[in-house]
Structures are given as structure tokens and as C-alpha cells.
Image (cartoon, rainbow, N blue to C red; front, side, top):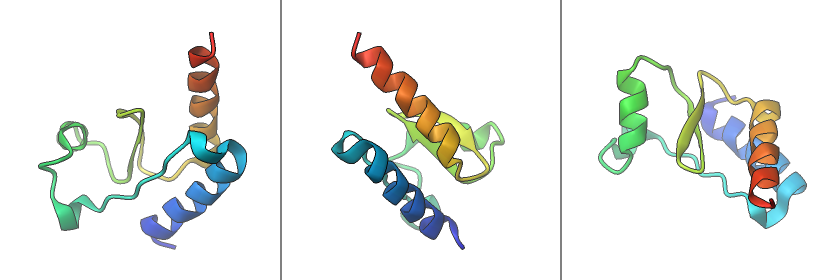
Length: 83
């Protein structure tokens, strides 16, 4: 599976759990460039590998599609926003 397919699978998993509370977007910066993604550019310049996972615009994971870890961060984020 490539990263686009893995991202689509993660999106399905997250939609089942969180419904419309989450949005998953796959961006191939090799095709579209980094001009619109300054955070991605900074993370890549720091030496982190693809793929980069951002949550609420903040880089959280690099080097793989990590659905359980993403769910944990989303749970913590949603819990924090309900207080």
C-alpha cells in the first residue's frame, strides 16, 4: 500500500470513530509543492521523513501512518476542548 491508500484507510477508521469531528486530507507535496504548506516545509527541513501527520495544523508524527497514535491525540484534543 502507498501513503495515499494508507491515509484513505486511516480516514475511514477515524470517520467511523469520530464522524464529522475530523477531516483527513492527503497532500502529496512532491506534486503540489510546499508553498502552501510552510509547517510541512519546516518539518522536512528538520530532517523528519514522509509522511508527516499534522493535527490541528501542528506536526505530531513522521515516518508512518499511525492510526492508534492519531486516535489518542484526537481523544486528548477533544477532551481538552470540552472543558
